[in-house]
Image 1 (cartoon, rainbow, N blue to C red):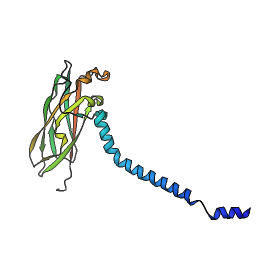
Image 2: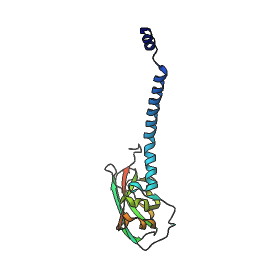
Image 3: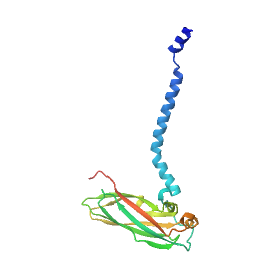
Image 4: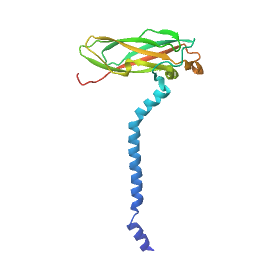
Length: 188
């Protein structure tokens, strides 16, 4: 019997160790892949569902205009490392479904060319699924020369389907907020 124990300890099962190592390596590779895919997948999820106040992109309003009115307030925030001033558009009130164009005005107050981009959201969050942008400055980076100002248009509409959303029955105002960030172009 001592001979059997010696034989079995002398030759450990290599196939089992190899399987465990391959499974562990596959899990590690899968986790790394998922971490790289997380940001684009989350962005896609937010764009499709309007989650977190993410607006929708549209070619135009196909659902018509309804009698209910709503105000849209515009807001801007500027990162501390961006030497710009940004004046948001003024609040407007109109029937839901009307296509509107408003302008933000940005001015570079530094002594060098600055490129910036922006992120946006809508409050209340649930309204993001019904806030549709046809055209927006936020789709591209903006570059301003020293002292230069630019009008940055947004063409949008509120989808009339929001009128059927119970959580939005008492909402009278939606806020579209942009936060502007410096884009490091390496020319500093």
